[in-house]
Image (cartoon, rainbow, N blue to C red; front, side):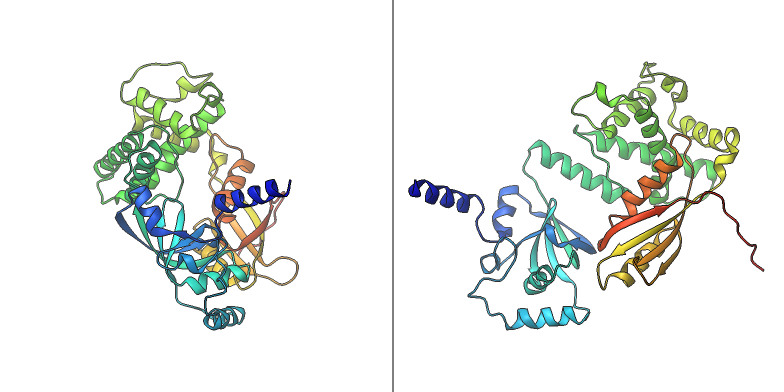
Length: 359
């Protein structure tokens, strides 16, 4: 049976070649030749899988192979251990994977030392091969680029991202007309997300409709319901109370959500306050503090000593259709825990509070 073991071993080797991925090969396979400059971002190291020109010098875990000179590699590891700031690496992106254009040794050293992410200047290459996955990816990338929204909206039907862009454009025109002032497209997109998209998505979630549409997402249902309600203006029965909550005009729906929030539920105008404790990776504290403080919901951020590394005070808006705990949990998981370098968080929600007035 020794021959069988050797055959299985050889088969596994072919399935998982001990080599970093080649950008050129994946670029041709995906037909990814159109490129977009994405600027500088923090990139998780686990998503850096290959190299543009030196993929044969590194294994599948991006460790230098024996034939590669190690002096530069060791020097970079020493610099990183000492906490020195190194220039951003340069990466090419195809879908959710990254390939090193410049900085192979910095990537290998950071991975060897257990770092979780690295600063990089990114050029994204958009797949052109016309399979459904790529078509949806291109449309999602276009939607994200135009709106600037930092949220992931996942649709499974071609053309629906364009419909959402039409909603944003219509809402932008409405805000400009009714407010009589300059409203940026990005500002209108965020207003659409907070006062139209998210409230309707919460209604759909509360109506437990997703189980009736296997293989679809909540975002798909938003596009479907809003199209039939606001474009075709058909009355449809979606669930208990849902038809009553959704007028046949998008802006009327927004006003209804805002008015119900302000007039029928004045107690919801109060902010939700919570404190979040962070454990973070070594030498990431300052960067994470700066990232936290840049979020408008974070009122205070402190580096502290002891078993916890960082303490942040957050203030969130109440939501007509979600509980306070759901809002806090959503913000912590969608915004705070995704910050590179964060290991774990613990959320503290005040019961009774006593606050002295500032003098």
